Length: 263
Image (cartoon, rainbow, N blue to C red; front, side):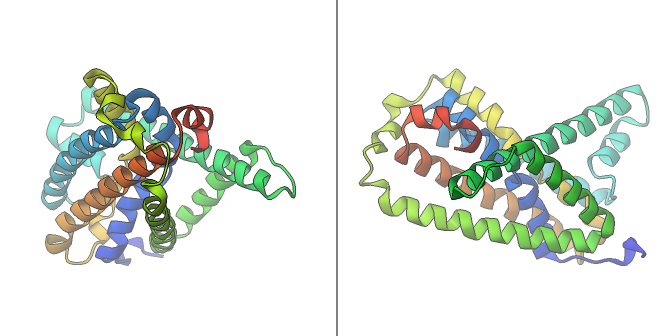
């Protein structure tokens, strides 16, 4: 199969960007972010989101000038040449992808094991689910670029519907919650911890750069490249802030801390 002939549209590119970000970051780091920023966690998400948006602008411009499946690796090589510095930087990039893969798989295992336990039917070790999702994703990616983008679209829009429902239901009961006072400025951490929380949270925004790897397969790139980056990042920033507001306004800090892996 010639993957170069496989074409994706704006919707698929946005799904890749959102899927890279919502893939597991928000589920894995929300509890840790609250530990840092407390009631100011929504602001910490906004700080990290602003940095993500500025980075997305750079990616959009680079993608138009240097469209290549190498994405970030290609841009670094173009900027600094093929030398020890660019090679070392690219190795750090791949290590970060491995770490993100571990983070997402761990979140899937923790949530899945907790969900199975709640059913009361039987229990399972999270490492079984963790390994299974890595093998399944590798197989899917091996099949074809188009198969991966279709699966990504289905998974992403399903997650967005579920999280959108969480936001709607959460806001319905938020103002009658006894924990809404946790969002007050008096419960915010110091400026240093808010920024530190934003740094931790930034891993939840990593992933939009995967759009760059898909640019050679994108239809009408001059029109869709910038739109794909901006739509995906802005959508996720808004979603994350709403989720942070609802979580902190509905659950005590103590419970968030105890359920940090699956808050």
